[in-house]
Amino acid sequence: MIDVRKHTRMTVGTRRQATVLMSLMQVCIVAACVSESPDAPTQPVVAQVAARTEFPIPKALPTYDDELMELASQVPGFAGMTVDKDGALEVTLARSVAGLSAQGREHVGRFVTAHKWSNKFRDDANPRVRMVDLDAGTLLRARKQFEDGVRSLKFTPILVDFDEDANQINVVVRSARDSNQAVQALRRGGLPLSAIRVEVGEPIVRLQTLKDNVPPLRGGMNIYNSVDGPERFCSVGPPMSVYQASPLIVPVVFTASHCTSTKNSIGANGGDDIFQSGQLIGKEIIDRATFIGSGCPAGNQCRRADLAVIQIQSGLWALNTIANTGAPHGLMYPADQMQTAPYPLTIVDQDTVVAFETYNYPKGTPVRKQGRTTGTTQGNISKTCVTLYDTELAVTLLCQNVVNAQAGPGDSGGPVYYW
Image (cartoon, rainbow, N blue to C red):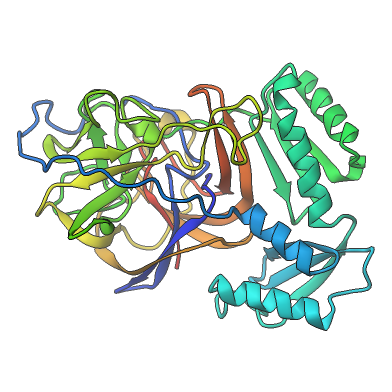
């Protein structure tokens, strides 16, 4: 699964406590629009939705890599920070330094405190130290040089990642020939072979497909847009009131931009009407256009999130809630069986989001996801702040996170959270 830049932190109460880090419009289960048999009426119930509200474009937040670069400027030899398999926080340092100094520990401690990691991971007050070959600054500068030259290559990579655990730049490509070119380009940037990992993989698949109309609307439940219709479902994040046009507070949900008909815009006639099981529940009000510059690799059109914002119709939502289908399952099915597989999808409860904050989380952090096709699944953040080159939509997504958890067509847009 892939997520973006900063992650929206939502502390959740009721039966369990959780922190929503991201949603599947941002995660690398951002998958393809896949058709399935409709389980909703084809004739929508017409209802009135408030006029679209205009909102200012927010200032871009620092990416996780930006923050690591800043920490590297303060801590000599700093190479990264991860969570190990035992749930302990670990700092990596280049062998060019003797170790983590007292001042370095102070800087790391402030970083942990500022990101609200305290008491979330073992040893966060006194993280373990592991020695590696190269510092973060060296690797991140090499990554930037490689990405700035992507347009001059004869191929487009699938993704590019600074792997702070392996102390490598990881590039995923489509063929062995592309792999050789990627290695040569990284070598020209001064990296030793030991710091380069190029893999042949499949392009990211976008997952567009809890399936019933069970009011009120909660995070993880299904929606579809007015143009594509009920054969192409997605999921939503928890309803919330986070956009304010004083004195108006607007209830909204997030979903994936690729779950809308226009993608990267709201179109000349305004955004899509959004339905759940035949009932009009809201309207798309924000879907940012692509941009150039500001960290976007040269020659690319970029976004920081595969994200659309939907204004919800009054009375049809349960504010700050995520549908709960019980303990996360580990069921795995082939792609061609996902639509009919017996995933646990019965809503047994709901979790209540009680706070919204924005933080990054390190590689190795355990997370869960909720989606209308595969329900509740669990995994770990396996890559942080990768650049995802989406040739299908001709857009480059900056600073996405990858999570190794099960998801299927229709889960796009659902919440991914730390509990």
